[in-house]
Amino acid sequence: MCANRDEPIFEIPALRTILQETWESLPKRFMGVTLDEFVIMPDHVHLILSLEGNIEKPTSLGAVMGAYKSLTTVAWLKHIKANGLECQGIIWQGRFHDRRIRDDLELELTRQYIRDNPLKLKLKQVGGDGGLW
Image 1: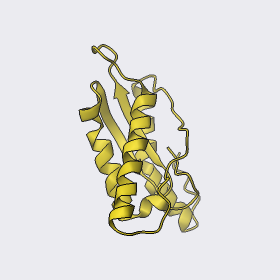
Image 2: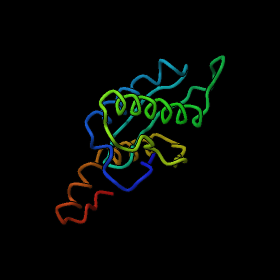
Image 3: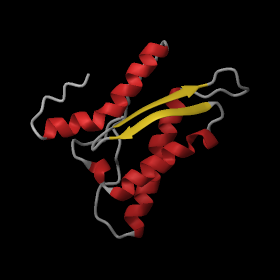
Image 4: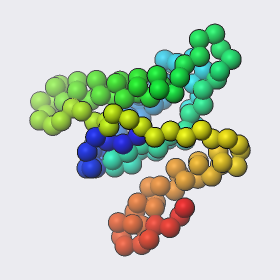
């Protein structure tokens, strides 16, 4: 999921904490959600989660991601107000890119891509090609 602007907004420590804590709280809010990989990049977030379909009230990916965006935005707005900050409270683009992971190999490759993404960014910043994927 991407920030609503092309700036390293997610490098703000308080916002990173909000993003991380909200991620960790999702299974408490949504029955059947299991968290996997998660990484916060300067202007976007990569994540893997699974949704169990054989529970009494299964949820959708859209509902989980919508709640994540809403919860993080509300927490960020509260932080802005409590600290008298002057910054934009809207942090997310309206949409997100999702992809179904079909098998164990694709899962491992996707996990590795997410784990490598911060290093790839650092290599790119110092002039390397970042060719990890």
